[in-house]
Length: 184
Image 1 (tube, rainbow, N blue to C red):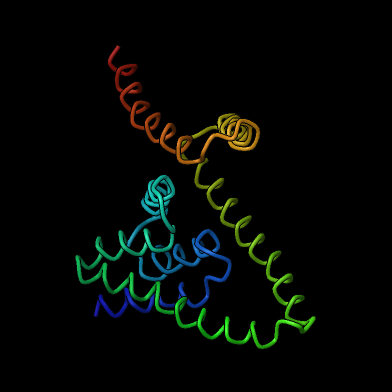
Image 2 (cartoon, rainbow, N blue to C red):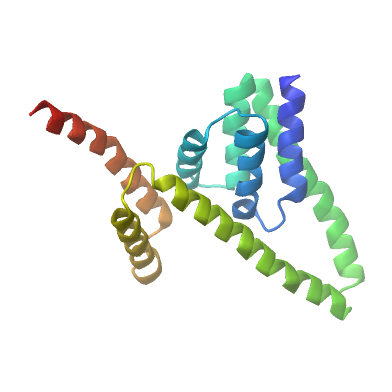
């Protein structure tokens, strides 16, 4: 039963995740955290942060890890297949129609109209993560981290993986620092 649930959860993400991996993250979160409760919000956030620091598509990394965590090797394979199969099938169909209808103006309008929808999905995901960050950080720390991230990524062109890695290392050190402060 768990393999079927894994397959269906990630199949829905694969079918509905239009706009690439980052756009599918809120869909994965809905399935994994809210629907099936395989993880809580904090675990999902940690998994997402670690997944973003590794190379490759985020949707397949999430599917592989969550599938393995929930259902072992068979669960991982089930989740990965469910994530990839819809894309493969839809790409074959889509490319056939795009090639056949490439001169139609409504096709260009349709693809242009999807961009704001993906932007809204990413904004919603960002707001959710900002709300979750209030559990461990003060408002000024959140603003400082956001500003530093924008400067490092956009102005200094530091790869986001290095920023994520630095923040993960900081998070590992920070709890130890609190323990030391309590002991003195």
